[in-house]
Amino acid sequence: MFHSSPVDANGSVVNIPTVSSEEFYDPVLLTEPAVYHKEDTENQQQEGRSQENYLNAFYSIVIHYLNETLDHIILVLLAYSILCIILYKLLFRRLGPGYRRWLVRKSHLPPCTRALLVTAHPDDEVMFFGPTILELRRRQCRVFVLCLSEGNHDRKGPIRRQELWDACESLGVRPEDITLFNATHLQDDPTIEWKTVTIANQLLRQVESLDVDLVITFDKDGVSGHPNHCAIYYATASLCLSGMIPSNCKVLTLETVNLCRKYLSIFDLPITLLLSTNWVILSWRARRAVQNAMRLHNSQMVWFRKLYIVFSRYMVINSLREINKSDVEFEILDT
Image (tube, rainbow, N blue to C red; front, side):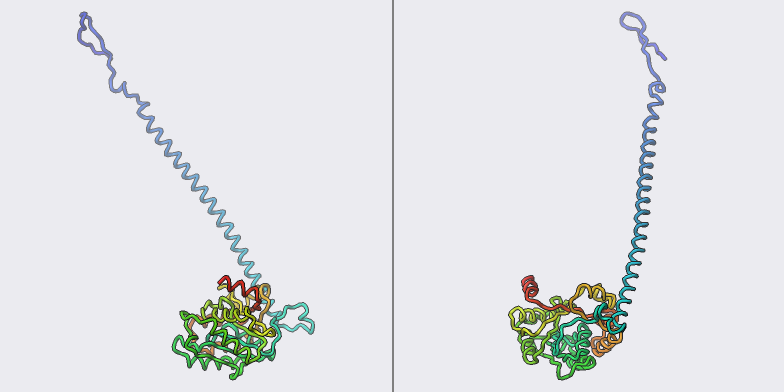
């Protein structure tokens, strides 16, 4: 479309072309940006669906393998449990005079006639060492108990003292073979440091006066980690390191196990036989004797100790390690 314009300087008419707004804005140009935006959105949606599909596939694969793994774990645990039960029953089943030739022994301790058990508090002797005491008494070994405090942390010293005598008597320990200290510097308190020299002097005096050929106590971790238990080990280790323990006297320490093994009861049996050099394994009837002795410490029968009596391996299994000089040197230097 053209519109006439004014006359130019020469007098001729000049025609100036003009473009209408409809002709200037190309419809194609107007729609292109919208088309591009739509395509980008569709691509993003496709990418999102693709990523979601990948995640779903990965999740399905993970769930599938987890289910298979869980099934395998359950089967392994079931097989291990059956093995423990069968092995435990075989230990106490008499198969004839030669059955011990191929069957592992239910106890493996050095021979002794007089043994000294060193503990920190009343109830330690049953809670941790019950199987060992019963096995030593079965061998006609005379067992002496040295308890270095009367357990007066909860102001129940006199009660716990009587409980100690009753529990030991139920395990076959004579009342005259029990020694309990009530010294101000050896109080039942995890915040009070027991001096190694003080414990060592008391221990050495008992070893010499009783003429024992076996000493049994805690290892460096004290089974429960109680500082009083650990202090007894370091006092005993210092005597061994200095050569003050008689050469004919062996020293065994009760092995501390991790929390899982601690509450496996008889299901810790294969691990004990594989990893330990000295052990005691009680029959189910003898286990009940240890449990009954522990219940005589009635002042300590809170709910978690009742669970301990049922599930703890220390009610049925004791694994012990003989102290040797090289191990002692390493552990003391490491400490």
